[in-house]
Image (cartoon, rainbow, N blue to C red; front, side):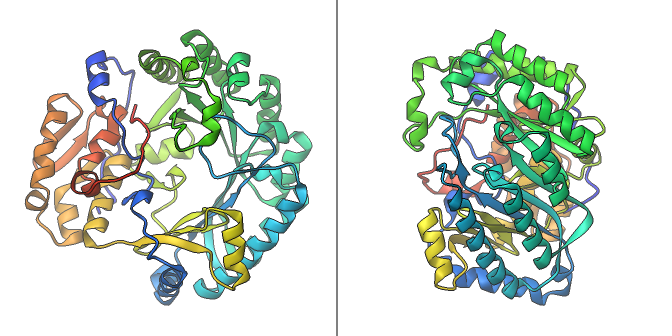
Length: 473
């Protein structure tokens, strides 16, 4: 792919978004943190396939010296948030965290045996669940185990997801000392009625204390997560939340749409459907959020993500250097991602892999001396080609036909004739410009970039899928 592709279009206020356009494009679709998407993973992919991919990565000098990205899943939470669709275990038994840490060390030992010691790491992300369920000492021990196994580069990004209810100034100082230099805070909404409806009470003052402490310590990037479409949300209440977040001035804001799928996620059955904002109101919530965040000086990086002008994510967007992995948009170059812990999803070479989703299965595999991978996928040539095209659309908003043709030894116009024809309605709606050897996502189209990427998803159009995706708006 052409690394010198122009930056994604600058995005202003969505003045051209009409109710008719929203209604036409309000469909379900993948988020494209990977292609093919995780619903295409198969049980036939086993730990042996994963071992082979790790060993192949180790044998190639170019791969062995390229920095890795590492994801660690901590599944425990003290209390249940009704909206949550993450893999989690609700418990107050602290000894479960201690036992889990022992199993993470086992997995780490098996992983390093295959991939080799001291591999450079430029990005680490602890997600969950609630990583801060673990004690300061346990988190420090985990970081030390990771340092003993990998070579953390000095300029790397080492992030942890934080529940502000579990962290004060003293705890944050301990996390900083342990080696974390980025943090993401789950806020979702500051309105008391909304917090009660989603079973997550956390005052504004609590979040402000953590953010201010992070700035004093020197965290170079602080992210806040918000969700629109939650029960009891109104235009007025969410406007207050957006304004309060803007006053806190986090470096990044992730604004997610709530996907109500109670048939898949039991916790969501505790949310009364009647309490959810109507579809038209939900779209208003999105529009006002975008308008107010842009007015407050945030850059619309792309799907869900906003950042201050001088944040590395905003800079990467301007320079056409955005990338995307299982955690969303990132500044890190395209690299292998190894995942540790229950349900962790990784990418090594031309494979995707996922660990066992239950704690019992995860531990049982490790007790047998096996890496706990239970499903995955080996990508074929068409998968790799379409992954590059979808990544270019999602990250740069630009596809260069000649560059793709040269990289994959195809004739782009011939290979994607059906897709180029399918783009014509989106072009008529002003979302893309296609022709003259390239595709460009327009300023308007950037708000619907998933719809553009979906055109190139072979599995959506040629095979039936039982996957339930979130709405793209």
